[in-house]
Image 1 (cartoon, chains in turn green, cyan):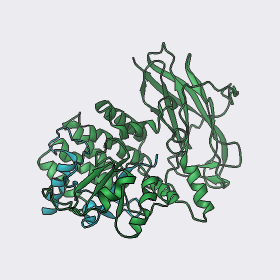
Image 2 (image 1 turned 90 degrees about the vertical axis):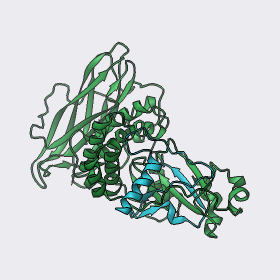
Image 3 (image 1 turned 120 degrees about the horizontal axis):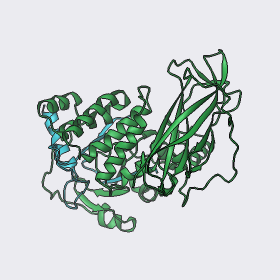
Image 4 (image 1 turned 90 degrees about the horizontal axis):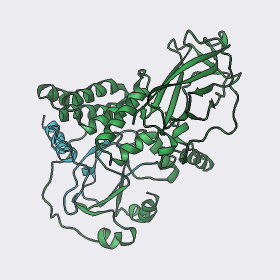
Length: 397
Length: 66
């Protein structure tokens, strides 16, 4: 993209060319930060559900003043002669009618109820996911579920169901299991269309480093620093990338060479029986083959009563992964950054990798626990607590 | 209802049949009009259609930041 941004800058300034971006990304604000960093000043549209069905990115298409496609993947060196300097005739058939703007989700729903089929319900889900956002995620999930009940092979509905679950997971309306449901839906979509590069990338973003092609969001840290150095305020991200989204690929999962010592080997720390902190475990992917790795994500939130807080004036949140016989765990001891205030209520995320032994088969349970300092409420009693975590992996040939 | 019909017609072209049959992937063809679509901007989520730019030469760039 930066190549085209630079190559076309003068033409855009002269009004001879319009650049129009479409980003295939779950989080619009991450693209906003990217655009700010690269100084992209052209309109960029958000396609979180792959509505355009792009099989891969980037795709670059030159479209003339009549809306007719004149070049696909044009080359910068011949772009002016072969497209920009030419005058084109309006010589294509009229094609489909123009878009009437954002769809009417209520009208689409009535239509789906009157004539139920998978495509009609998918269209309801699409309208709600793109235009309703997290507030309508419940209804979008319901619409995609209806589509899939009518056609369990509707791969687009599987992918988009995953997007809606992930969207709800990151919202105030989150429900336990949303993140795992997103991963499982994306895995199902990929099984139905293994060549869909964008769907594959969405899973790899959260997956083990063994199957990652590159780090997905390592650029975020660099972008924030450079934007700040320019004297600008970097676009704030609603969900900061962490763990697997920042980690680079590796060729093997290596056991932690530093051999950290277990923080509570005798299990003496009091358990968090009141669930002051909620922990949710997600395994990406939920099922692996013998010898393969999974990335295990643990999301921590101050509890359901919403009164509990992190106590940042003591040791940080840590997770110890004891693992299971024959499994390689990396790293075994995880530690989350502390908040900069004495108490805070943010979501904290940690992740690690677990590689199955070649002989593994069936369900395996990895022993793990979290240790944290929490206060029951603002200014209330503060405690050091342990929570035992249930990490279950399914190994199948 | 006319708006709805137009939107669905567009979806039908761009997203494949609404009958639940396997949808075709994005495949623009040289010499044919690019199917129209409407999506929100990444900033204030204003709806923008490709056809808003009729009369101008457009370089459509589908990408991701990752």
